Length: 441
Image (cartoon, rainbow, N blue to C red; front, side, top):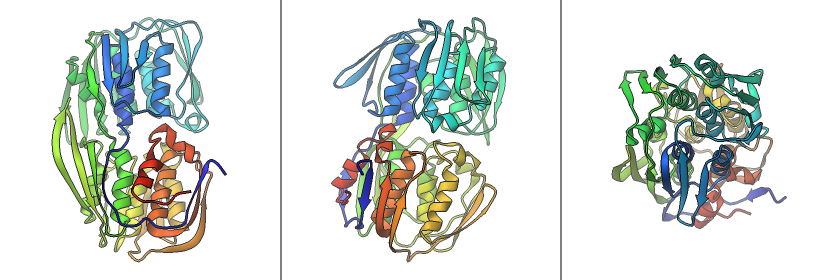
């Protein structure tokens, strides 16, 4: 089967240095913000994946000239509210929730009818969480029960709003901020803590944004329709992509790894704090600041004595894309690990909480669930010998990669479907894994 991999041997000890895929969240945001800047922006080290390609194609459909060069992406911005589009265009966001939800805010003042669609997985996800605030702005927007397709239809005037974002969703927050940028006046957002790439980019671009950090929320104030100039940006490595190799190294035998130039933004790097609390051997070296983002090299060594954790809820939004990997480490820890308020996990590309629980049970790990809280009963001696087949996971790239890590470190004979799913975020995942010595057919 072409779109399937087989793994029958655990990975041998390794000592390597690698670089991982560029940050997907930043890549998509750079494409969108450069499209509404004034002049030519140049983006280096842009992630070459399906999600980012869909972002580029979407901006082109909105009338933005974009040239893909060997070393960079050149974006000729049209300014705020400068999109020139044909009637009844269709934008396909593919699998990307970031692109789909954020582009609705970016297009809140389009003057022609626009239809947004996505793939089978994205079409199952909740868009009411961005439709509701956009309607408060006065945007003409329609959907079928809060799901794709979503239609925007010629909104000429929007009004600023005061908005409470209480889900901890960076996609919702960014959608509201982008709509605020299109809207004359002052918009205020009280936002539960979540990744803050959009805010940092806007601050770097000297956009009139103010942020007040409180314990659980950020108060964000934006002045609308303030044009900003083009920019150059080199996208760092993605902590979410790096996390697969962090956990691969931790669970492998007698191995060490340095992952270079990774974005370790504190709103994204919750996995580093969680794993450190579990006694994982992880260090950050060569740390520096770039355009407001923290970047560093991550040094990892194999770890044998993981400790169970009661995971602080404050770290949930900072590690939302990495929880399946964290659960895998908890499965090898001594004791009972506890995680709470994980409802957002089931609102990702697939119902990841449900899938992760079923996966751990398949490995023979006891999991107790109460609504969106779970307990994982770790087994430090966990080793597998049976045959396993992983399929029907809505082609979720992170499920595929997590399963690959498990197969290479815990044993067993594995068949894993839908390897093409990695094209959305990390196309060279298998190539790097094989360079570390993994045997994957």
